[in-house]
Length: 403
Image 1 (cartoon, rainbow, N blue to C red):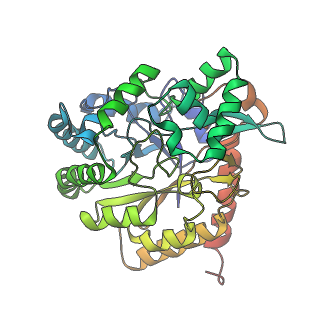
Image 2: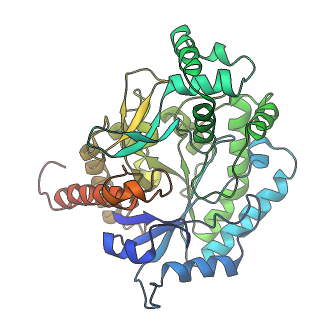
């Protein structure tokens, strides 16, 4: 595996100098300052390559920009409204500009409105650190009582709705506003933040879009961009829904093995692949992660390795982001499957036999606790996770038996 590190650009509290010290080989980044639907120009792409390749003192960092995460798919494309056709054309131009710069892997997602959802961004864990958490009862309190979405209560069990009402009643105004900010924060590093009015406006536009319609729109998008990716030698890889179940009455189409099988079969191409995120997929108890990886191993172009601990086995349930080797996912079994796949690809002569991986998220520990970095992206917590994952990878790669 090629060990990489997510970097949000020059404003990231974790610097390029820091990344060289944690031992990452490459960087995962994006042009977060470019509005969704706009072209990523060769000049801006070259600037990011240069920023990644240079330390503070001007000397070479030795790091390369290995994966784009993410080249956003606009809401217009997902809904097939307004300027969606123009956005697809600009998407293809951005892909070409990225390929011309040497990029080969582009991660993206097809989640409507919010790119990820948590109810607590700094939830205390017993060791004194903190992590991100999704609590279904707090989310229901937001949905039913803060956002006041029409018909929201019907989407939850009576027990969850009752608990949500109790929790909402116990919150003061500041706590309710904080919950709303947490839920609507969306993609880290994005220039696009949303008010409650923004969220409700998007929900209104999605009102007539069923799960089947969103899936069809996704296939239309892939039909348009995958041939370009093939021509350019790019590997596109869709990130799963986070969390992997429907929220706010919105459809979700990338939450299960069946979802991925449908999309990968609908546009069957080596350029149409998967970002295998053990954290997002692992939040759902009916996703068997080692088995799922083996099912889609041939199309996995990028790995997010993180772990979550679920409160129970409800499909639509609460979870928190655990230490990388300590959650409900058997990370050693997943990594063993990855090592086997890399060996298979190498034997087959595939150019992409080394799969890029990054330690996804991490708990805030030690000096992270006072730095207030991007939620989920502390330097020390991720470094600890990378070290643990690196140890597992190294042991398995050198093992003569057990794979």
